[in-house]
Image (cartoon, rainbow, N blue to C red; front, side):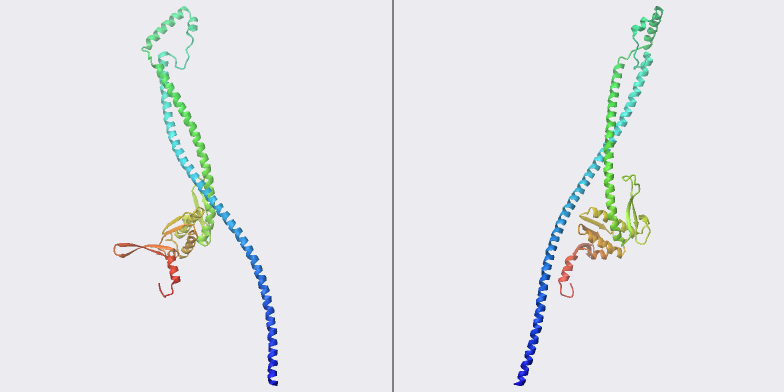
Length: 375
Protein backbone atom coordinates (compact mmCIF):
# COMPACT_ATOMS: atom_id res chain seq x y z
CA UNK A 1 0.00 0.00 0.00
CA UNK A 2 2.88 2.37 0.75
CA UNK A 3 4.45 1.56 -2.62
CA UNK A 4 1.11 2.09 -4.34
CA UNK A 5 0.71 5.35 -2.44
CA UNK A 6 4.12 6.49 -3.59
CA UNK A 7 3.15 5.59 -7.18
CA UNK A 8 -0.05 7.56 -6.85
CA UNK A 9 1.87 10.50 -5.44
CA UNK A 10 4.26 10.37 -8.39
CA UNK A 11 1.32 10.15 -10.78
CA UNK A 12 -0.25 13.11 -9.03
CA UNK A 13 2.95 15.13 -9.31
CA UNK A 14 3.30 14.19 -12.96
CA UNK A 15 -0.33 15.10 -13.55
CA UNK A 16 0.20 18.44 -11.85
CA UNK A 17 3.30 19.02 -13.95
CA UNK A 18 1.37 18.09 -17.09
CA UNK A 19 -1.41 20.42 -16.00
CA UNK A 20 1.05 23.29 -15.63
CA UNK A 21 2.57 22.47 -19.02
CA UNK A 22 -0.88 22.28 -20.59
CA UNK A 23 -1.78 25.59 -18.95
CA UNK A 24 1.36 27.17 -20.45
CA UNK A 25 0.60 25.67 -23.85
CA UNK A 26 -2.98 26.89 -23.56
CA UNK A 27 -1.71 30.38 -22.78
CA UNK A 28 0.65 30.23 -25.75
CA UNK A 29 -2.16 28.92 -27.98
CA UNK A 30 -4.47 31.71 -26.82
CA UNK A 31 -1.72 34.25 -27.40
CA UNK A 32 -1.05 32.79 -30.85
CA UNK A 33 -4.78 32.78 -31.59
CA UNK A 34 -4.97 36.43 -30.59
CA UNK A 35 -1.93 37.23 -32.73
CA UNK A 36 -3.49 35.26 -35.58
CA UNK A 37 -6.74 37.18 -35.18
CA UNK A 38 -4.86 40.46 -35.27
CA UNK A 39 -2.91 39.27 -38.31
CA UNK A 40 -6.16 38.26 -39.98
CA UNK A 41 -7.64 41.66 -39.25
CA UNK A 42 -4.50 43.35 -40.60
CA UNK A 43 -4.56 41.16 -43.72
CA UNK A 44 -8.25 41.84 -44.20
CA UNK A 45 -7.57 45.59 -44.02
CA UNK A 46 -4.64 45.20 -46.42
CA UNK A 47 -6.82 43.07 -48.69
CA UNK A 48 -9.37 45.87 -48.80
CA UNK A 49 -6.60 48.39 -49.55
CA UNK A 50 -5.25 46.12 -52.29
CA UNK A 51 -8.73 45.69 -53.76
CA UNK A 52 -9.25 49.46 -53.73
CA UNK A 53 -5.85 50.00 -55.39
CA UNK A 54 -6.64 47.27 -57.91
CA UNK A 55 -9.97 48.90 -58.75
CA UNK A 56 -8.18 52.21 -59.22
CA UNK A 57 -5.62 50.51 -61.46
CA UNK A 58 -8.41 48.85 -63.46
CA UNK A 59 -9.98 52.27 -63.91
CA UNK A 60 -6.66 53.76 -65.01
CA UNK A 61 -6.11 50.84 -67.41
CA UNK A 62 -9.57 51.40 -68.89
CA UNK A 63 -8.88 55.12 -69.27
CA UNK A 64 -5.49 54.42 -70.84
CA UNK A 65 -7.10 51.88 -73.17
CA UNK A 66 -9.70 54.40 -74.25
CA UNK A 67 -7.03 57.08 -74.63
CA UNK A 68 -4.89 54.69 -76.70
CA UNK A 69 -7.84 53.84 -78.92
CA UNK A 70 -8.62 57.54 -79.35
CA UNK A 71 -4.99 58.29 -80.20
CA UNK A 72 -4.92 55.41 -82.67
CA UNK A 73 -8.11 56.66 -84.31
CA UNK A 74 -6.65 60.18 -84.45
CA UNK A 75 -3.45 58.81 -86.00
CA UNK A 76 -5.43 56.82 -88.58
CA UNK A 77 -7.49 59.90 -89.36
CA UNK A 78 -4.36 62.00 -89.78
CA UNK A 79 -2.76 59.32 -91.94
CA UNK A 80 -5.86 59.11 -94.16
CA UNK A 81 -5.99 62.90 -94.34
CA UNK A 82 -2.32 62.99 -95.34
CA UNK A 83 -2.93 60.33 -98.00
CA UNK A 84 -5.85 62.39 -99.32
CA UNK A 85 -3.75 65.54 -99.38
CA UNK A 86 -0.96 63.70 -101.18
CA UNK A 87 -3.45 62.43 -103.75
CA UNK A 88 -4.88 65.93 -104.13
CA UNK A 89 -1.35 67.25 -104.53
CA UNK A 90 -0.70 64.75 -107.32
CA UNK A 91 -3.92 65.79 -109.06
CA UNK A 92 -3.07 69.47 -108.64
CA UNK A 93 0.45 68.87 -109.97
CA UNK A 94 -1.04 67.17 -113.03
CA UNK A 95 -3.41 70.11 -113.56
CA UNK A 96 -0.50 72.47 -113.00
CA UNK A 97 1.52 70.75 -115.73
CA UNK A 98 -1.45 70.87 -118.11
CA UNK A 99 -2.00 74.57 -117.45
CA UNK A 100 1.68 75.26 -117.96
CA UNK A 101 1.44 73.53 -121.33
CA UNK A 102 -1.63 75.64 -122.14
CA UNK A 103 0.25 78.77 -121.09
CA UNK A 104 3.13 77.88 -123.38
CA UNK A 105 0.66 77.28 -126.19
CA UNK A 106 -1.04 80.63 -125.54
CA UNK A 107 2.33 82.37 -125.42
CA UNK A 108 3.08 80.98 -128.87
CA UNK A 109 -0.32 82.10 -130.13
CA UNK A 110 0.19 85.59 -128.67
CA UNK A 111 3.60 85.80 -130.34
CA UNK A 112 2.10 84.74 -133.65
CA UNK A 113 -0.70 87.31 -133.31
CA UNK A 114 1.80 90.04 -132.46
CA UNK A 115 3.83 89.14 -135.54
CA UNK A 116 0.67 89.25 -137.66
CA UNK A 117 -0.28 92.65 -136.19
CA UNK A 118 3.21 94.00 -136.81
CA UNK A 119 3.10 92.72 -140.37
CA UNK A 120 -0.37 94.19 -140.90
CA UNK A 121 0.75 97.52 -139.40
CA UNK A 122 3.78 97.55 -141.70
CA UNK A 123 1.59 96.86 -144.74
CA UNK A 124 -0.81 99.65 -143.81
CA UNK A 125 2.08 102.02 -143.20
CA UNK A 126 3.60 101.16 -146.58
CA UNK A 127 0.29 101.52 -148.43
CA UNK A 128 -1.26 104.49 -146.61
CA UNK A 129 1.73 106.29 -145.14
CA UNK A 130 0.67 105.97 -141.47
CA UNK A 131 0.44 103.12 -138.97
CA UNK A 132 -2.87 101.68 -137.70
CA UNK A 133 -2.61 103.14 -134.20
CA UNK A 134 -1.91 106.72 -135.44
CA UNK A 135 -4.88 109.10 -135.37
CA UNK A 136 -5.04 111.22 -138.56
CA UNK A 137 -5.29 115.01 -138.16
CA UNK A 138 -8.47 116.90 -138.87
CA UNK A 139 -8.60 117.29 -142.67
CA UNK A 140 -10.66 120.54 -142.56
CA UNK A 141 -8.05 122.29 -140.44
CA UNK A 142 -5.24 121.05 -142.70
CA UNK A 143 -6.86 122.27 -145.93
CA UNK A 144 -7.85 125.62 -144.38
CA UNK A 145 -4.25 126.40 -143.52
CA UNK A 146 -2.94 125.79 -147.07
CA UNK A 147 -2.58 128.31 -149.90
CA UNK A 148 -3.95 127.77 -153.40
CA UNK A 149 -0.57 126.64 -154.73
CA UNK A 150 -0.11 124.28 -151.77
CA UNK A 151 -3.63 122.93 -152.24
CA UNK A 152 -2.90 122.14 -155.89
CA UNK A 153 0.38 120.44 -154.92
CA UNK A 154 -1.44 118.55 -152.16
CA UNK A 155 -4.14 117.37 -154.56
CA UNK A 156 -1.58 116.23 -157.10
CA UNK A 157 0.30 114.40 -154.33
CA UNK A 158 -2.89 112.71 -153.17
CA UNK A 159 -3.72 111.69 -156.72
CA UNK A 160 -0.25 110.21 -157.02
CA UNK A 161 -0.68 108.36 -153.71
CA UNK A 162 -4.08 107.03 -154.78
CA UNK A 163 -2.62 105.77 -158.03
CA UNK A 164 0.21 104.15 -156.05
CA UNK A 165 -2.14 102.49 -153.58
CA UNK A 166 -3.60 100.23 -156.20
CA UNK A 167 -6.35 97.80 -155.20
CA UNK A 168 -7.76 98.41 -151.68
CA UNK A 169 -8.23 95.45 -149.30
CA UNK A 170 -11.77 96.01 -148.05
CA UNK A 171 -11.42 93.18 -145.47
CA UNK A 172 -8.37 94.68 -143.72
CA UNK A 173 -10.41 96.31 -140.92
CA UNK A 174 -12.45 93.14 -140.41
CA UNK A 175 -9.28 91.05 -140.27
CA UNK A 176 -7.77 93.49 -137.80
CA UNK A 177 -10.85 93.26 -135.54
CA UNK A 178 -10.77 89.44 -135.66
CA UNK A 179 -7.08 89.37 -134.78
CA UNK A 180 -7.61 91.92 -131.96
CA UNK A 181 -10.50 89.89 -130.54
CA UNK A 182 -8.37 86.76 -130.62
CA UNK A 183 -5.54 88.60 -128.89
CA UNK A 184 -7.89 89.84 -126.14
CA UNK A 185 -9.21 86.30 -125.60
CA UNK A 186 -5.72 84.79 -125.37
CA UNK A 187 -4.63 87.57 -122.98
CA UNK A 188 -7.63 86.86 -120.71
CA UNK A 189 -6.83 83.14 -120.77
CA UNK A 190 -3.24 83.91 -119.85
CA UNK A 191 -4.36 85.98 -116.85
CA UNK A 192 -6.64 83.15 -115.71
CA UNK A 193 -3.81 80.65 -115.99
CA UNK A 194 -1.44 82.88 -114.03
CA UNK A 195 -4.06 83.23 -111.27
CA UNK A 196 -4.54 79.44 -111.21
CA UNK A 197 -0.79 78.96 -110.98
CA UNK A 198 -0.64 81.27 -107.96
CA UNK A 199 -3.46 79.31 -106.28
CA UNK A 200 -1.69 76.02 -107.04
CA UNK A 201 1.59 77.31 -105.65
CA UNK A 202 -0.16 78.41 -102.44
CA UNK A 203 -1.79 74.97 -102.07
CA UNK A 204 1.53 73.23 -102.74
CA UNK A 205 3.24 75.37 -100.09
CA UNK A 206 0.51 74.48 -97.56
CA UNK A 207 0.72 70.76 -98.33
CA UNK A 208 4.53 70.82 -98.17
CA UNK A 209 4.37 72.55 -94.78
CA UNK A 210 1.93 69.97 -93.36
CA UNK A 211 3.89 67.08 -94.87
CA UNK A 212 7.16 68.45 -93.46
CA UNK A 213 5.73 68.79 -89.94
CA UNK A 214 4.26 65.27 -89.95
CA UNK A 215 7.37 63.74 -91.48
CA UNK A 216 9.65 65.33 -88.86
CA UNK A 217 7.31 64.24 -86.04
CA UNK A 218 7.23 60.65 -87.31
CA UNK A 219 11.01 60.64 -87.84
CA UNK A 220 11.48 61.79 -84.23
CA UNK A 221 9.23 58.98 -82.92
CA UNK A 222 11.06 56.36 -85.03
CA UNK A 223 14.39 57.73 -83.76
CA UNK A 224 13.26 57.32 -80.14
CA UNK A 225 12.13 53.73 -80.76
CA UNK A 226 15.37 53.03 -82.64
CA UNK A 227 17.40 54.05 -79.58
CA UNK A 228 15.52 51.40 -77.57
CA UNK A 229 15.35 48.55 -80.11
CA UNK A 230 18.93 48.80 -81.38
CA UNK A 231 20.57 48.14 -77.95
CA UNK A 232 18.18 45.22 -77.46
CA UNK A 233 19.24 43.70 -80.81
CA UNK A 234 22.98 44.29 -80.27
CA UNK A 235 23.03 43.84 -76.49
CA UNK A 236 24.34 47.40 -76.23
CA UNK A 237 25.44 50.25 -78.48
CA UNK A 238 23.27 52.98 -79.92
CA UNK A 239 21.86 54.18 -83.25
CA UNK A 240 20.06 57.20 -84.63
CA UNK A 241 18.54 58.54 -87.84
CA UNK A 242 19.73 61.79 -89.41
CA UNK A 243 18.64 63.81 -92.42
CA UNK A 244 21.25 64.37 -95.09
CA UNK A 245 19.97 67.93 -95.51
CA UNK A 246 18.11 69.42 -92.53
CA UNK A 247 17.19 72.53 -94.53
CA UNK A 248 15.19 70.42 -97.02
CA UNK A 249 13.55 67.53 -95.09
CA UNK A 250 11.19 66.54 -97.93
CA UNK A 251 13.95 66.32 -100.52
CA UNK A 252 16.69 64.97 -98.25
CA UNK A 253 17.60 61.37 -97.56
CA UNK A 254 17.69 59.63 -94.17
CA UNK A 255 21.05 58.30 -93.00
CA UNK A 256 21.38 55.56 -90.35
CA UNK A 257 24.22 56.16 -87.87
CA UNK A 258 24.99 52.97 -85.92
CA UNK A 259 27.45 52.22 -83.13
CA UNK A 260 27.51 48.53 -82.14
CA UNK A 261 29.03 47.79 -78.70
CA UNK A 262 32.81 48.06 -78.73
CA UNK A 263 32.98 49.97 -82.03
CA UNK A 264 33.18 53.58 -83.09
CA UNK A 265 30.26 55.38 -84.70
CA UNK A 266 30.07 54.53 -88.41
CA UNK A 267 27.66 54.59 -91.30
CA UNK A 268 25.70 51.52 -92.33
CA UNK A 269 27.93 50.68 -95.29
CA UNK A 270 30.95 50.16 -92.98
CA UNK A 271 29.24 47.42 -90.92
CA UNK A 272 29.41 43.68 -91.50
CA UNK A 273 26.60 41.72 -93.12
CA UNK A 274 25.12 40.56 -89.81
CA UNK A 275 25.36 44.05 -88.29
CA UNK A 276 23.64 45.53 -91.35
CA UNK A 277 20.85 42.95 -91.02
CA UNK A 278 20.38 43.69 -87.30
CA UNK A 279 20.39 47.44 -87.95
CA UNK A 280 17.79 47.05 -90.68
CA UNK A 281 15.69 44.87 -88.35
CA UNK A 282 15.98 47.51 -85.64
CA UNK A 283 14.62 50.13 -88.03
CA UNK A 284 11.76 47.87 -89.18
CA UNK A 285 10.78 46.97 -85.62
CA UNK A 286 10.97 50.64 -84.57
CA UNK A 287 8.49 51.54 -87.29
CA UNK A 288 6.36 48.52 -86.36
CA UNK A 289 6.19 49.55 -82.68
CA UNK A 290 4.82 52.97 -83.67
CA UNK A 291 2.16 51.49 -85.96
CA UNK A 292 1.76 47.74 -85.42
CA UNK A 293 0.71 45.67 -88.40
CA UNK A 294 -1.62 42.66 -88.03
CA UNK A 295 0.75 40.52 -90.12
CA UNK A 296 4.55 40.47 -90.46
CA UNK A 297 6.26 38.35 -93.16
CA UNK A 298 10.02 37.67 -92.97
CA UNK A 299 11.78 35.72 -95.73
CA UNK A 300 15.17 34.26 -94.68
CA UNK A 301 15.88 37.42 -92.72
CA UNK A 302 17.92 35.51 -90.13
CA UNK A 303 20.38 34.00 -92.63
CA UNK A 304 23.29 36.43 -91.89
CA UNK A 305 22.85 36.18 -88.09
CA UNK A 306 24.84 34.00 -85.70
CA UNK A 307 23.28 32.01 -82.83
CA UNK A 308 23.57 34.78 -80.23
CA UNK A 309 21.96 37.31 -82.54
CA UNK A 310 19.26 34.81 -83.48
CA UNK A 311 18.38 34.42 -79.78
CA UNK A 312 17.97 38.20 -79.37
CA UNK A 313 16.01 38.31 -82.62
CA UNK A 314 13.69 35.57 -81.31
CA UNK A 315 13.08 37.50 -78.08
CA UNK A 316 12.06 40.54 -80.07
CA UNK A 317 9.81 38.39 -82.25
CA UNK A 318 8.14 37.01 -79.11
CA UNK A 319 7.51 40.53 -77.82
CA UNK A 320 5.83 41.74 -81.03
CA UNK A 321 3.92 38.46 -81.55
CA UNK A 322 1.53 39.62 -78.81
CA UNK A 323 0.06 42.22 -81.18
CA UNK A 324 0.90 40.79 -84.64
CA UNK A 325 0.88 37.43 -86.36
CA UNK A 326 4.37 36.62 -87.62
CA UNK A 327 5.08 34.45 -90.66
CA UNK A 328 8.77 33.52 -90.85
CA UNK A 329 10.41 31.61 -93.70
CA UNK A 330 13.58 30.09 -92.23
CA UNK A 331 15.91 27.11 -92.07
CA UNK A 332 17.28 28.03 -88.64
CA UNK A 333 16.51 25.50 -85.90
CA UNK A 334 16.48 28.13 -83.15
CA UNK A 335 13.75 30.05 -84.95
CA UNK A 336 11.77 26.83 -85.40
CA UNK A 337 12.03 26.10 -81.66
CA UNK A 338 10.20 29.31 -80.68
CA UNK A 339 7.47 28.95 -83.32
CA UNK A 340 3.90 28.01 -82.36
CA UNK A 341 3.21 26.27 -85.66
CA UNK A 342 5.45 24.86 -88.42
CA UNK A 343 4.59 24.35 -92.09
CA UNK A 344 6.98 22.43 -94.31
CA UNK A 345 7.17 20.62 -97.64
CA UNK A 346 8.40 17.04 -97.80
CA UNK A 347 8.76 14.51 -100.60
CA UNK A 348 7.83 11.07 -99.35
CA UNK A 349 7.73 9.72 -102.89
CA UNK A 350 9.93 10.87 -105.76
CA UNK A 351 8.28 13.76 -107.59
CA UNK A 352 5.38 14.04 -105.13
CA UNK A 353 5.50 16.99 -102.71
CA UNK A 354 3.41 17.05 -99.56
CA UNK A 355 2.62 19.82 -97.10
CA UNK A 356 3.21 18.98 -93.43
CA UNK A 357 1.97 21.14 -90.55
CA UNK A 358 2.74 20.79 -86.84
CA UNK A 359 1.31 22.83 -83.96
CA UNK A 360 4.17 22.85 -81.46
CA UNK A 361 2.04 24.30 -78.67
CA UNK A 362 -0.42 21.38 -78.83
CA UNK A 363 2.50 18.95 -79.04
CA UNK A 364 4.08 20.41 -75.87
CA UNK A 365 0.78 20.09 -74.01
CA UNK A 366 0.38 16.43 -75.06
CA UNK A 367 3.94 15.66 -74.03
CA UNK A 368 3.34 17.30 -70.64
CA UNK A 369 0.26 15.06 -70.09
CA UNK A 370 1.91 11.86 -71.36
CA UNK A 371 3.22 9.42 -68.68
CA UNK A 372 5.05 6.97 -70.92
CA UNK A 373 8.69 7.05 -71.99
CA UNK A 374 8.03 8.23 -75.57
CA UNK A 375 5.50 10.07 -77.76
